[in-house]
Image (tube, rainbow, N blue to C red; front, top):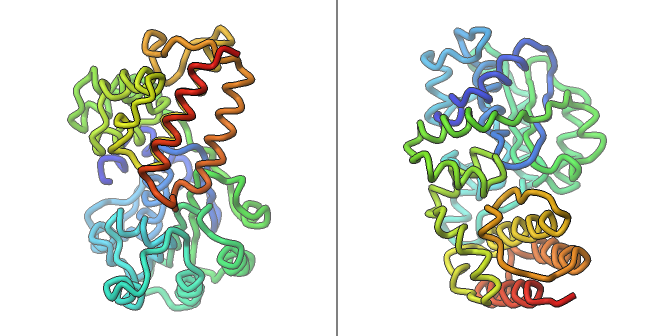
Length: 334
């Protein structure tokens, strides 16, 4: 994550936001642009003992405490699955319940965690630099959790600041959005993103191909590489779907498979409209006579499937059904 924090487009935005005042920021935009990295840069600077205009010093005890995920004045509100993925410790009670297999890690921000954060906001800070609450992804709050946060945002204690980061701000309560200063994430220049990906050890041809498949979002391109995705996989994906080859999706979760299919559908619509594809090279798209209307209906079905992708009844069967639907659409004569 330190590499993402050092990304030049994140550093620029952090400098801009730190020059402004406000007790609550809402960082919004599509996935892959670094909302979490920017949020962490902000709270690190707020709590840093030797901050500069560019942000946290990175060397003081406060910065070290954030690096090792033990800062007493930082509260994180995340789904437990996200906290585990990012290496943040769960509460003792939550970890004990999961260790005993009495429940699985939550994919939502639990109301119990929100209540702990509200109590945290009322306590005296430990290091004399105030307190910070980081909420990510903010759209994972349910209505009860969001309302609990709203009360604290409306009447914040004097020394606590909030940063909410989201990839779906439209899902947040309007009252939550209205209590925050909004910042729309900035897109890096393609050359800047390619240079940064190269700095992460990604060969230039791979970086260029994965940045394209990620729609220009460098964090998503890096995640694809770390998950084992390759330019060859993306190049063969469209034709594999036309052939009904579900094996091509075997290593993907249903959510990731749906994302790839939505990108394919998007580019086929662009081709039908005479526009340049965004995620694939034109030569990679399969021959298909499917009309814009048929493709639009397919995209709607994919969107519907995405709502249950996190909890599929049977992931293998879902991937086979997605492949069959894709093949039927691509072979459509309408």
